[in-house]
View 1 (spheres, rainbow, N blue to C red):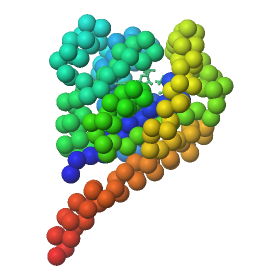
View 2 (cartoon, rainbow, N blue to C red; view 1 turned 60 degrees about the vertical axis):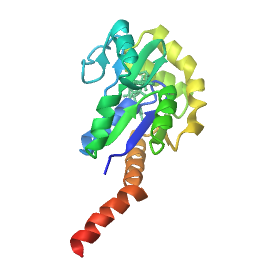
View 3 (cartoon, helix red, strand yellow; view 1 turned 90 degrees about the vertical axis):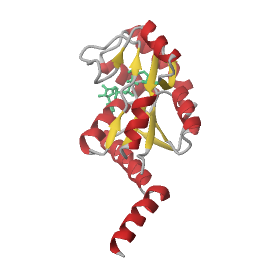
View 4 (cartoon, rainbow, N blue to C red; view 1 turned 120 degrees about the vertical axis):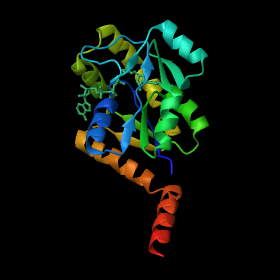
Length: 202
Ligand SMILES: Nc1ncnc2c1ncn2[C@@H]1O[C@H](COP(=O)(O)OP(=O)(O)OP(=O)(O)O)[C@@H](O)[C@H]1O
Ligand SMILES: Nc1nc2c(ncn2[C@@H]2O[C@H](COP(=O)(O)O)[C@@H](O)[C@H]2O)c(=O)[nH]1
């Protein structure tokens, strides 16, 4: 039985990384894909933990080798997901989270028809601006660029299966846990679990 593939997308600063980390602390059966990026590390970010930080040359070589399940240029940097890592993790039966933008989500959906898309939105653009500025890790120019893209990002909401409004953090986290729980109850997984149970009890 393979794991569920969940795509989490949001405008920058909506809170998806915070939600994902809170989920990972509470759920041992879910794993997060660590993306490759050409973006410079933020203060405190760790290579191999937050991202695999690579040069543009390294990224392009990986892209040419077909190493990425999906990749996109987002806010001026390149980002990509390792195909090998994803396929291996799913094969072990663990659920996998992809924290990627809407362009990457589109590519993954084409390859994995049963991937579940979750779009996270901030309650308003004013709140989004406060979160991006409050995070205190990006220059004013970077914050401006990301805010300017937020409306376009949000216009892709309809391409996803679930929408979580990240206003109150605990409510949004409970919503994310509920979606994951619903994924685990999908018929294909449950049929396989039931067949095992049925056989063992017969
Ligand atoms: N519900 C919430 N209420 C208040 N602040 C929040 C909430 N959720 C997240 N934040 C804060 O908002 C900021 C942005 O959150 P986070 O870095 O998780 O966003 P993100 O969507 O992952 O952004 P990016 O795509 O740029 O990585 C952080 O400082 C985080 O602590
Ligand atoms: N298509 C992909 N998008 C990705 C990937 N990893 C992250 N992202 C998205 O980039 C932006 C900016 O992230 P930041 O860490 O620089 O703030 C955000 O929307 C991420 O979801 C990826 O592998 N593929």
